[in-house]
Amino acid sequence: MSDNSDLIKKINGSISDRSLIWSKYDAGINEAQKLDQYPQFNNPNTPLLSSSLSQTQTPPDEIASVNWQLQQEDQKITQSQNKIKQYQEEITQNQKQFFIVMGVGIFLIFILILIIFNN
Image 1 (cartoon, one colour):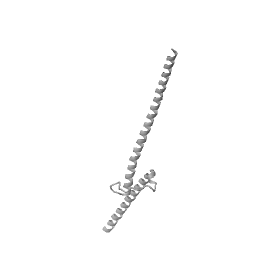
Image 2: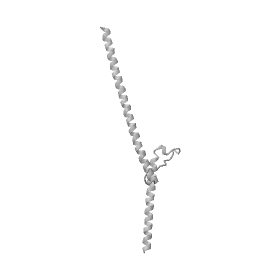
Image 3: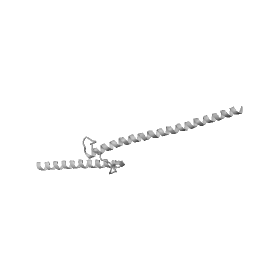
Image 4: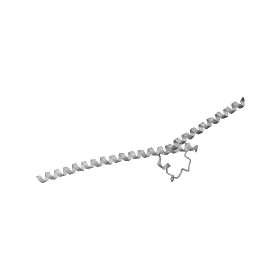
């Protein structure tokens, strides 16, 4: 009887280990699919990373770490693009103000010249 319970425990342990392996595999596949949105990972000429990015150095953790780093870089790029757009809008506003001031100045000079020459 003891042999059967030991066997059942071993089988249950193996099934549990197998489930854990498959869940890690699924997580790794999910992370790899996230990488597909970045074109540099679809280029076969891009060198692979040689240093470890996670403490466990397992593929799912490495991919998750790369995804996190890419998201951070993507956020920095988005913030920089937003700043560039703001600067471009400020430049456009400054140009409009410049032309308004110049137009008013030229108009006032023209009026002043008309007043001087009409007297």
